[in-house]
Length: 108
Image (tube, rainbow, N blue to C red; front, side, top):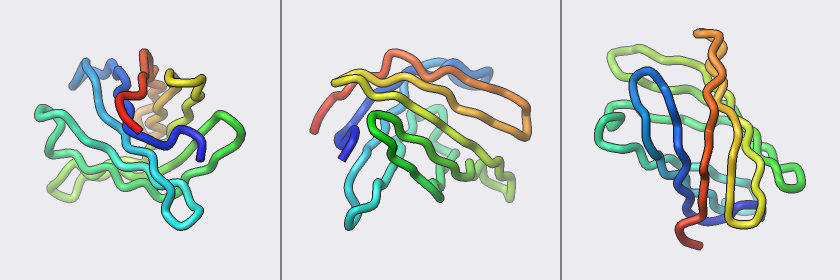
């Protein structure tokens, strides 16, 4: 499966600038994506609802659950080139496009 493994990618948002970890795995033939959030973002849960794989690109949508009933839809698209990854996180509600840069595979 494209991109299977554990990745670290840089994100530059107003509330956080740094790396997040992404785990991409095969779930009975479907691509599963989980996030390991840094301490500063530990209150945010990412619920991925749809992932599509097309050649070396992954795209998906989901909901950011920020607690206290606050949620925000999100969409992401990343391109994988060997052991590197880059892309964009879109937050339509805020009309923001956030670059995802310097992604690198850290384990299989």
